[in-house]
Length: 381
Length: 136
Image 1 (tube, rainbow over the protein chains, first blue to last red):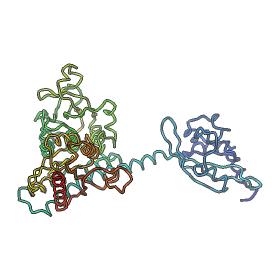
Image 2 (cartoon, rainbow over the protein chains, first blue to last red; image 1 turned 30 degrees about the vertical axis):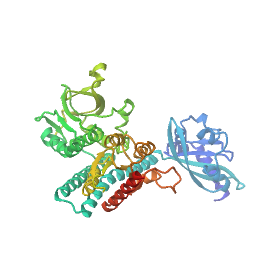
Image 3 (cartoon, each protein chain N blue to C red; image 1 turned 180 degrees about the vertical axis):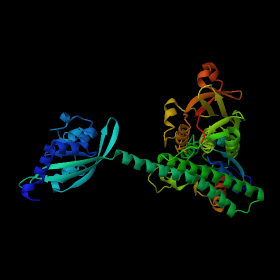
Image 4 (cartoon, rainbow over the protein chains, first blue to last red; image 1 turned 135 degrees about the horizontal axis):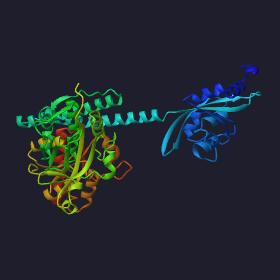
């Protein structure tokens, strides 16, 4: 580049022009100009936004003070600007700063600007806030890990059952037991895959429900309860279903089945052996149908009650943390919501904790009641 | 004779317990089961088994902790413990003396998926060793 058209002059020229500054400020990429002593001499609007500081708190200050609150420059390994000052060439790096209790992942590119004697006069730092991208990558990694774990368990068991079948000369009755378990375990594996497919549809914003009028018991619950029957028997549990057999509901039966599957899987997995699982319904005369699944189990603490509906959150090591998140999204699509409340059980009835007296609670078994609602007036498609 | 020996299987996967039960009962062992660590300890006290087959990742009480508890207790230390291991679990628990962390005091280890013949050989050997110890 010729001396008549020197880059720093050009930059000053652009920055000096109102239109040029407007463009730089309008960019969704942060740009900051530093002198060789790390003093910030100009920063665009996006940079101020990332740093969450007004212009007067940025200009003239050291970049390391602004980003990290340090009183000396960062190491060469950590700082792209420092490397650019040393090698007088472009450099790039990653900066993680904390703002408002949240980490921000910033990809940094730094470029040298030379003065008239070819001395390095300024460094331009271009900063891209890729926090969302990093979060997505992290989420995707966690999803892969969870999916692998969730699928590994049924596959390993199926493999184990099949190994015994293949290697041992067993009487027909024993072979049948093993075959039945392979079938049932495969079905559960398929349900897990189904959950992940729904989850990816939700993430892609492609999940649509097709509501139609159904008999909730006959068209959904009967099949779901039958599917889980084997598993309840293994823990000597049983279902108490109080959903009216003639209840008509406008919903997407396939997805309501998934909601019930996820809630019942948890109720069986975490419920106490030799107890009952309550599947109920109530009409409070408002805009919603109220459904619930309650089991005698270790009570979920108040702090965990909200968190368990977030994806990948599980209070138990054998849970994937996706089932309740999927259920919540499907319920939202039905205009409803889901929550969990502590409950007590007495004489075959499940009672919310707030309606039972403290004195009586000591004599009763406690548990968790998952309640979800579906809007009554969903439009049929 | 080992044929009447009582074996306690502690694993949170009922299907896996069923598979082991079939393998062991086919060789005339008596099998009792538990599905978490807490229940496992209760069954040890209640059933007084001749051998324990123990999974490591268990709800309520971890299998490794249960193993330590049993081996530290003079009442149960003599019961041979055969630990079930999967690759993922090996990362977290050091099983063998050549590894740096403290070694799990189990008597033997068998990999999942379990080969029935391998399991039976190990069970036989552990019961035989245990009987020898009793006679001393």
